Length: 339
Ligand code: HEM
Image (cartoon, rainbow, N blue to C red; front, side, top):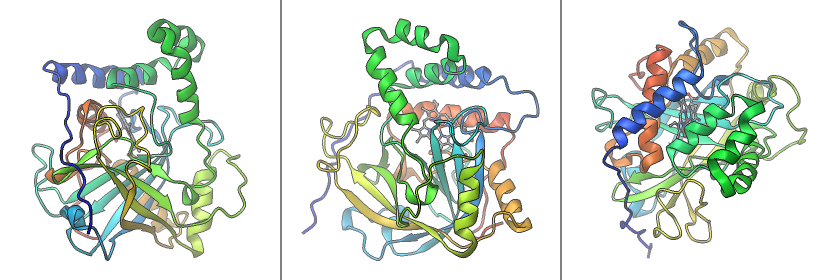
């Protein structure tokens, strides 16, 4: 008999937050000082590669998780973008946030963003770490902006965080230096929760490929070169898993700096993400990569049953749109097949 997870999750919504989130999105966008016509993202500016993917729902999904795309077995084509989080592209050997974003095609059901209710995509955004050291969107945006001036970053952090500065800096360093040998052999985590029907959950990806010869990242574009080498004759795949909300103490909705421990909220496998064999340096591979670079991956590209939860997610609901409008991203793809 399956134990049904709790439905007792709650969000804390502050009355004045809409205005605050608008302001944060503008602060973030303006700090990047993008020139008109610059098509780079406000964050995760370096796209290592854009790939074709296939998302296959598991043959068995627990009854409580049979929601939306997970309601029945099926296969969705997808696009995947590997990125580095920094606002300015940098050498792959430098410590950075590592991103993996997925966009499923042909997803039915009403979507969340007003004006895009009939879109047929669902996105999942992951990074390499399981937590981030920020407690609210102000801390996230403040750090993203302050970190662009390395000389003043430390004194500013001590001034802003006071006694918390040391544990904060330690946690920040940890989240930027999570080992990254290859996208194929790393786990990735959404960090923030979403609704899952009446439940709440966090998604993660766990690699099915084993590390071959861990060499570390040395070159400027090692992440792309590694994906190219692996996908030329083989595939890369991940188990798509979710952790379900248990209670506010063990699995807080509003605390991205607190890990949901596996011992409290075990992972449930729901699907497999496969990157099929493809030549990313061929003319076709480059065309797909350039197309994916112009798409937008956004946690709010989702059916209503998977609404993002918490203040940090609601702040993203504004920030991603500001960034995608400024860089004139392509509209959501329609149809079920790759371009
Ligand atoms: C803590 C969880 C978060 C995760 C896992 C995450 C992950 C990602 C990833 C993977 C991308 C690259 C997407 C792509 O390849 O197109 C991205 C982009 C971005 N993120 Fe986040 N992010 C998080 C939080 C935030 C927050 C709190 C903000 C701001 C309030 C933010 C602002 C942005 C912006 C503006 C972009 C560029 C959007 C675009 O132009 O397409 N992120 N994020």
